[in-house]
Image 1: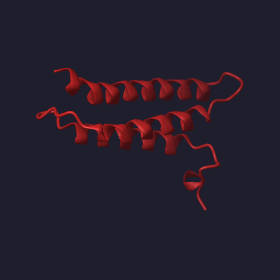
Image 2: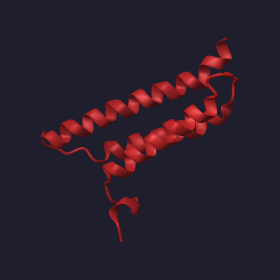
Image 3: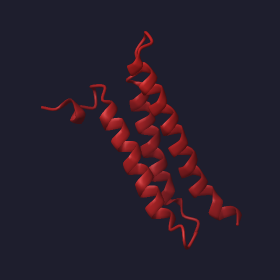
Length: 94
């Protein structure tokens, strides 16, 4: 029906929604005011990794502005992954 629901089709929208939803879930699970260590943060990390792989599938062989936009989305995914790993590991070290 729609390509966004087909996992075999390349969809940048699906990848970005997956990353933003995983990042939102990670922030909710982190409880920034209570900072307790929890391994439930691994679930959003896996979601961001899946979204990053889905974003990387959208790369094109020749450079274009779309290719540059996908690169910016990949950098955004790496930033989200770094934040989630920070929220995962920081409470263990305080």
